[in-house]
Length: 214
Image (cartoon, rainbow, N blue to C red; front, top):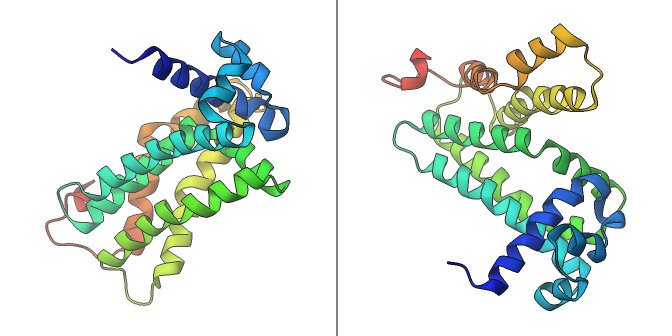
């Protein structure tokens, strides 16, 4: 059973995760966080010290979930291509689940929020580096350079997801089209299909690879 202080920690972090996508760095007050978590503002200061430290803890906890999922995928059994596929699916699934947070993070970065800049500088190289390492282990088709392959994967797999889920979130896609967009662009099956199409375009065939049969 978690200690009471640890339970308060986690309640505050979960409240921060719920509120940050709505209001961003500028609008997130420790009073709002405490009210959402059902505690006193002094508890935020007690556990985290400052608003900047609290925001960093919220973002870091969320990011560590992503990196753990991608790391597990990169260590999965099977071919290098299969490990890359699993890591890419973990990244895409995370982006879909946390689309609103990612959108707010990019907005705050564009506005020069220091805590967001320092967070991105410290963490973006971790998962991007993991994808690049996995790309270095697969056999790419002749003439396909690693950085070109990386850009193609990020764009073809994730860009449609962010655009489509954003459109669905704000309700600009009518009825049947919205259902089709959700099923054919945002669903698990759609993510897997885009990953497989992208890898088929970039990678040389690996004999015996389970992905060649997908």
